[in-house]
Amino acid sequence: MKLKKFVLLIVIIPIILLSSCKDDSVSPTQSSSNMTLVGSYNTPDYAYDVSIMSINVLTYAFIADGASGLQIVNVTSPSSPVFISSYNTNGTAIDITTADVNGSKYAFVSDGIPGLVILNVTNVSAPVLDTSIYYQNDRVL
Image (cartoon, rainbow, N blue to C red):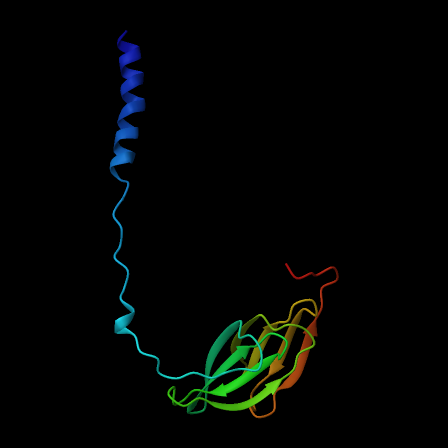
């Protein structure tokens, strides 16, 4: 009988402790009245993703813009973004990241079925294809 009580306590105590750790509180939602639109830029297609990179003293938004590929917009002054250039990839640009590699600036664009497109964007006015990597049997989910 003592063994049953001991086993029962071993099982019940952790359940009580774990259930007391549960947080049922609801966080209040933030009011949108604290946010204001600073600026916007209408891209030719659907903007799936954006990566921000500073080059020299200017800040650029690199936009994965669906069938329109890469769009590069100067956002140094966020209230008045300015189109700089674009690069039409062969697929549907859906994701993007940028990086500085050995002093050169690159945009890595996930381009749907055509795979990964790596563009040298050191000269933002004229992006240049560096590498395109295609993986056989890739498909868009």
